Length: 96
Image (tube, rainbow, N blue to C red; front, side, top):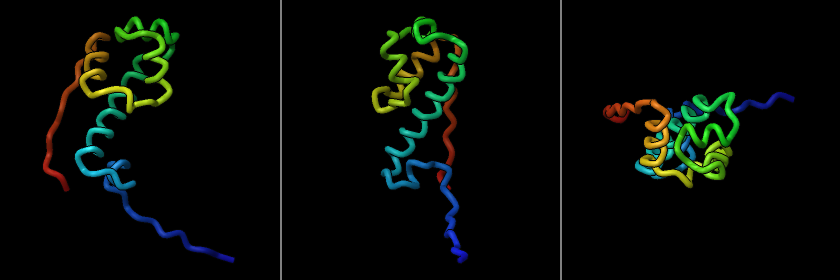
């Protein structure tokens, strides 16, 4: 018994692909990408050490590391990266 799986090419934004409105999908994607950078920069640190590095409390760091991006604004994530000595660059392009 052979079944074929229908595949569809993604847009590059998983949030748009699952139905979020365009603006919200872009915001969620940016927050997810910034969260990923914070996770990478905190690798090897305890949550308490990472919290100090990013200028937040340990429970707040715990939320971030558990993927609760809905609790963080873009501003908060950019500020956290800045406190850790990292710079965020934004690039704007015409949508495909």
